[in-house]
Amino acid sequence: MTATIRLQQEPFDAATEARALTHGRTNIGAVVTFTGICRGDENGEPIAGLTLEHYPGMAEAEIARHVEAAERRWSLLGVTVIHRFGRIAPGEDIVLVVTASSHRQDAFAAAEFLMDYLKTRAPFWKRVERAASGGSWVDAKTSDDAAADRWIKKPGHDQAAE
Amino acid sequence: MKVLYFAWVRERIGKPEEDVAPPASVATVGDLITWLSGRGEGYAHAFENPRVIRAAIDRAHVRADAAIAGAREIAFFPPMTGG
Image (cartoon, rainbow over all chains, first blue to last red; front, side):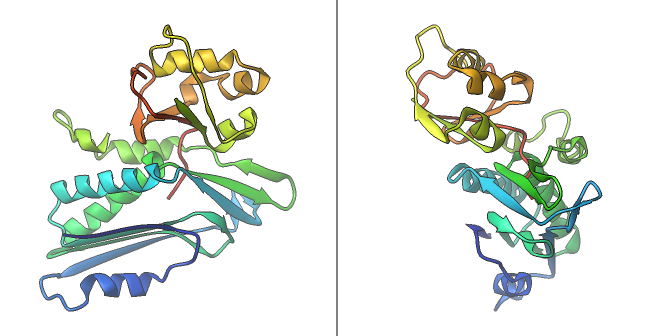
């Protein structure tokens, strides 16, 4: 399987990344592309932007562990994960997950699995800049933990995704 | 061993990383949190609610009861908010 994992400050182009994954291949029947975008508000309050801090080295390793877990669980022909760090303005892309498979179910499920785990297990932290009240760190959401937990098979769940 | 701090843990302690040499009685990640908390006001503030603190040893997630023997790099951070 083709796996690409990149952490970068600069923007990415989702269409280019999806094309790169499928280019010249005829065994791929489905590509799912998910893009996470910086909203202009947080909890109903307008924001000036986000700053994403990450743990270099561990972030790549943690994403790679989850890409491997996805590969064991579904029939995948390619995965690309790109996560930006540094300052991101409202409307800009933050994260990209592209999954390719022969049939759509595997690509859909793997993309959702990877996003749920990126939210709760990849070492990134968002700091919000507010025009009105200064900056603050974004609190983790219990709904994101619940979303990640639903992928844990019981009993005998996938330890590698822990 | 090298200790790394991220996000508000880093801000409260006032530095991104440092080398520490805890006594032998500090055996687990939880012990290390308690020991670090005694190093000053910023540390005590960062670790005031140890249950929300996440930790990694050599770039892999661990729980508070994980042994720190042989660890080269231990990181402490808040719950993650990427994606």
